Length: 328
Image: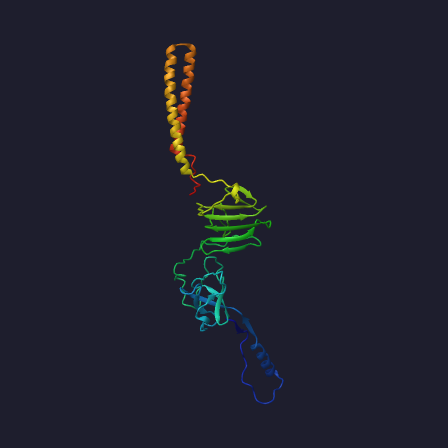
């Protein structure tokens, strides 16, 4: 809670009897009295966390740094903000204020200037060799995000981030990233082509790079190992009902195409057999015109045989079905 800290030690002694006389002793007494009344006012107090509550959402327990015996008002320190909660780790110092008989913490004190953890042994029973909580472990590979003028960055403890920034020309870009993979000057540099998963929202006249190509204009860029969308209604390109067409289901289409292909192959085989009979008859006449006609039918049969082979390959390979984009 708020407190005053005396700047100078109190050197006053008991008051002497008799009338005061202006001398060096009186001057020193007055000076000491003035100095001893001077204090520094602290509206917030540092508090070291040694327990994360399992019963009260966001609540923590621990020890005040300035006055170790100070009682925790409300029996627990709560997060000040109800909608944005930053859970500290055991051993981290937090800034605490008091309001209406309840202690609240506002922020984690940046003791180590690390986005991963800022635990530092102090007044509590915290030991650097212990865990920072039940599951959290230190990761020295987590770094701050490379920033530019005016950026607002939310730097997660676990190698994730949200950046509300610009392209350097005051054109807005928002980046949501997990798994940063590029480091420059001991900072994470958000790189959509190399990070694990990214969503970029870019505005008109802003630009970035995707798959080695420059991308600009009003766009949403998504890149990861896989993209899964689950919804009862997915509309691409427009939301106007009259302008929409249904997406083809690949496997259902394959069933229809396989039947059509089988029917076509059967018809082709009948045609090949009929042509072969005609070829035999024409060649038996030994007439030049008939021989020429037989040769034409032979070439036709070759084309039909090749068509059957290609249709069979289409059935077996299903190359027209995408292996990267799928729908339900």
